Amino acid sequence: MFKEARIKLTAWYLAIIMVVSLSFSFAIYVGVNRELRRIENFQKDRIQRLIRGNPLLPSLPFDEDMDAISESRKRIILNLALINISIFVFSGLGGYFLAGQTLDPIKKMVDEQKEFVSNASHELRTPLTSLMTEIEVALRDKKINLKTAKNLLSSNLEEVKKMNKLSNYLLKLNKFGTKDNDQFQSEFEEVDLGKVALEAIDKITPLATKRGIKIIEDLKSIKVKGSSESLTELALILLDNAIKYSKKSGKVEVKTKDSSLIVSDHGIGISEEDLPHIFDRFYRADTSRSKDGVDGYGLGLSIAKSIADLHGAKIKVDSKEGLGTTFSVVF
Ligand code: ADP
Image (cartoon, rainbow, N blue to C red; front, side):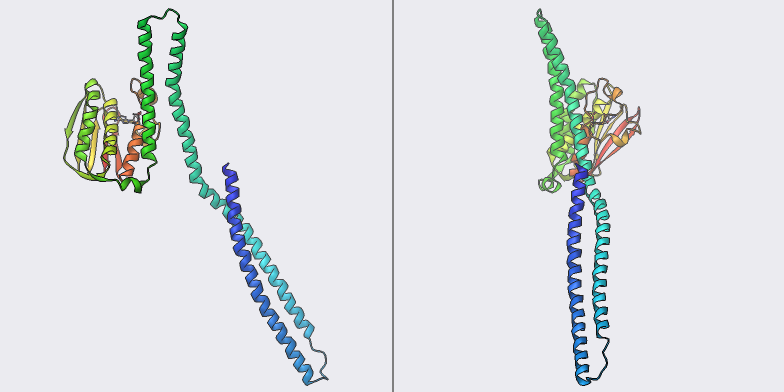
């Protein structure tokens, strides 16, 4: 598809350049030809006048002059043709190269989109297959009792919850990942980072309590321009990760300082090889370890980055494997 588009684009580039080049060549030829004709007529007149003034004059080299003029005309046509052929060849090659450069980012985007759809379908297929198998087995069991049926339903509910979480992630990714900066920023208001962090802490506290993790706050009022809803979302993602990847009964610190929101944990940390990829969609560091009891799709940080980008903020990570991780959102 892209090869065909590249050839079509090259043809368009070439057509435009050749129309311009041929028009210029035609204009040059018409102008030069007019001058040559003027010289021709001038020469004819001069010779007529000479013959009239002196009838005994031997024949003048009039034909030679005319031949030279028509020779010049042919040479001009040949030169213009050569110039146009060179322009055709060079602009064809250049156009093909430029068409490749123009289409490259679009190709990359389409490839990314394809990969994204394939990853999302894969993630959806796992809980769906599990749901299907459980239901089919239960339906085949003619003597199924109430307790087994209830167990089955609660297991089904877990799978449905997972799918619901994934679809929420996908919606958020779509919401923040494709928003037009100008349109989004026009809705910005003054937001207190301290309050944003508090709201996120309130929402995440039940999960922290469940895992026996203590959240330690050091929050000052710091005003930034932004969307309070999406910044709370960002803080929630960082806190959720800090809790998920902490050892049980650990502690997580949340701080606001110098236009930054800082979330630190003392959990498993991130290896140096994984660090450059953690913001990629669907990336989960060391899957076997991460998935061992820790749910996730590798989409949280990519949503967090989209939100930070929309606010013109940067997310910095400082992590040591086995010691812990600090995420700082710098405004
Ligand atoms: P996930 O749903 O897997 O948590 P994220 O996009 O939020 O997806 O994070 C991507 C990966 O980055 C995670 O799978 C995890 O390996 C790593 N990670 C993120 N936050 C932390 C953290 N606080 N401590 C250790 N690893 C983390």
